[in-house]
Image (cartoon, rainbow, N blue to C red; front, top):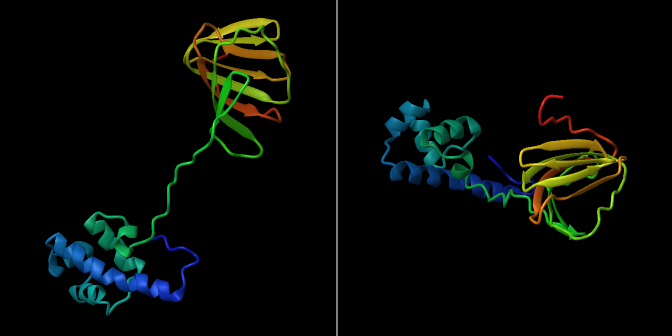
Length: 197
């Protein structure tokens, strides 16, 4: 049962007073008698009747078996307020031909991004910075320059590297490449392997 912390005593009493009529309506909609409900919940008929009429205050020991018997969430029995949209809407950032979609919002530690890199006509410009990076190719072909090595990764392949090494990422052809990237600013390793070493 989700009850907001800022709910006042009067509002709480109103919520509790509405439970009885809601229970009676639910039972009648389903065509269940008090005797049948008592048999499935283990709650006496007199207690169920007093609960529906408001003569008995609802509490978890009564509401849980009722919710189970009716096959509804506890929130539905008490008329709990909507909790809002649980989805996280993170905004993509585009710069330098790359679109980053953040998948985490942590200030420190590991950061996860979906990264889409569009083809570019420029020369590779290798960069270095603090951290450790793990990349997994979702779609397209990735060209990874890492120091003096040139690698091509296909969908389903992964690479991990210390970002102190000069590196550059780009599509290997004229199509965008989509990656899952996990980056640790302080050199945290993802400890994920595409295949045994």
